[in-house]
Amino acid sequence: MGPMPKPRRSARKPRVRIEKDTMGEMAVPADALYGAQTARAVANFPISGLRAHPAFVDATVRVKIAAARANAALGLLPRRKARAIEAAAREVLAGRWRDQFVVDVYQAGAGTSHHMNVNEVLANRACDLLGARRGDRGAVDPNDDVNMAQSTNDVVPTAIRLAALELAPHLLEALSGLAATFEAKARRWDGVVKAGRTHLMDATPIRLGQEVSGWAAALRAAALRIRDTLPELSLLGLGGTAVGTGLNAHPRYPRLAVKELERLTGIPLSPAPNPFYAMQSLAPFAALSGALRVAALELLRIGGDVRLLGSGPGTGLGELRLPAVQPGSSIMPGKVNPSMAEMLAMVAYQVIALDGAVAWAASGGQLELNVMMPLVAFDLCHALDVLAAAVRAFDRRCARGLEADAARCRSLAGRTVSLATALAPRIGYVRAAEIVKASLSTGRGIPELAVEAGTLAAGEAQRILDPVRLTRPGRA
Picture: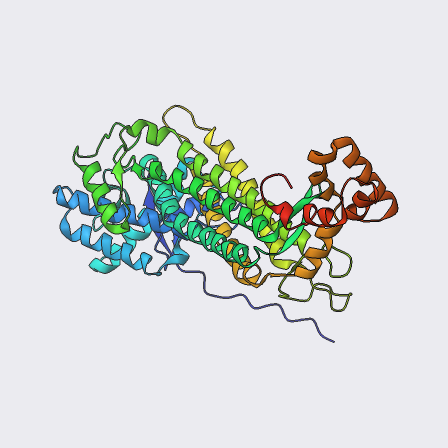
C-alpha cells in the first residue's frame, strides 16, 4: 500500500480587514461588525465562552439611542449620524447582529470591552447604512460619535439598572402566579385535616389548606421584597461620564438622555440625585440580588415540603400526589420522582451562589468606581432569568397538578400523639405526657388511653380530641 495522501491545505486564508485603535493596527474578520478593540478583547479573554446577557446588550444599546438623540438635540451630533446610529441600534433590538457581541463575560474591569463592542458594532453598522466602509471613523466613529458624552463608568451601571428593571417584572409575575396557584389549592384543601410536624416529628393537627396558605404568603412576601429594591434602580447616573463630574457632557445632556431612555423603555426614570454615589456604589444591585436570595431560600423550603409531603408512594408521607412528568429511574420500572421540585432546588442553589458573587463584587469598588460590574451584570441578569423560568415551570408542571390524598391525611392526623396537647389545659402537662408515653409504647390511640385513665368520658374525648377541632384557635 502506498503512502497516505497528505491532507489538502486550503489555499484561501480567512478574509480580514485591518482596523486601527489607539494601540495600532488589528486584524478583524472582514464580515465582522465589531472592530479593533473588540478583537483585542476576544484575544485577551478566552475564558468561559459565556457572552453578555441579551437584556444587558439591549440595555446598553438603548443607552446609545438615548445618547444619540440627546446629543443631536443639543446640536453636538449631526442628525445624519444620529439617525444612522439609532437605525443600527434598532436592528439589534429587533434581534439582528446578536452574533457580533463576542466579548467574554469575564473581561477587563468596569465593562470597557463590552461597551466598546457595542460602540463598534453600532458604528460599523451605521457606516453600512450611510454607504461608507466599515471602520471609516470619518463616517461614524465608535468613540467620538456613538460614545459622545459617555463613559463606560456611567453607561455600564445604567445598563445594568435597565436590564434588571426589564427582567424583574417577569420574576414578579412568576412568583405571583405560583402564589395564586397555592392560594387556590389552600381554599380547595381547607377541609383536609392532616398531622402537623415540627422538627419532622408529630405535632398538633393542621389543615392542609392552612399549611399551603403559608406557602402562598411567603411567595407574596418574597415578591414584595424584590419589588421594594426596584425604585432605586430607576435613578440613573448617566451623564456623569468618567467620575461623576460630567466632563465632556453638555450640562443638559443627563436630563435629556434619561428622558429619552424613559420613552424607550416605558419605565419611569430619573437622573440620580448624586451621580457620584450612582457610579461608585453597586449597593442597589446587591440589594436586589439579596432579595432574590431570600426568594430562593423560600422556594427551597416550599419545594422541599412538596417533596416530603409527596414522598412514597408506599413508604413515605404520601399526603400529596405529585403529577408524573417523566420516568424517574433508568433501572427501577415505574418509579416517578419529584423532578420539578428537584429542578427548583438546583436553580435556587445557583441563585444563592450568584448572590454571593454579587455581594463580593459589590464590596470590591475603590474610590470613584467599582470595576467588577461585568460580573454583576451577568450574574444578576442570569439569576433573574433562571429564577423566573424555574418558578414558571414548577407552577405549570407541578404545583397546579398537586392533589391531596385526603384519606391518608386524615389517617395520619388521627394517629399523631400530639393530640394530647389538647389534654394539657384539663389534666396538666405531666399527666398528658404520661398518656403520650403510653401511646408510643403500646400503639394505642390518645383518645382511648385518655378515657381509660379516667380523665375524660368517651364522648368528651371524641369531641375534645377531634383533629379538625384542634386546627382552630382556643382551648379544646
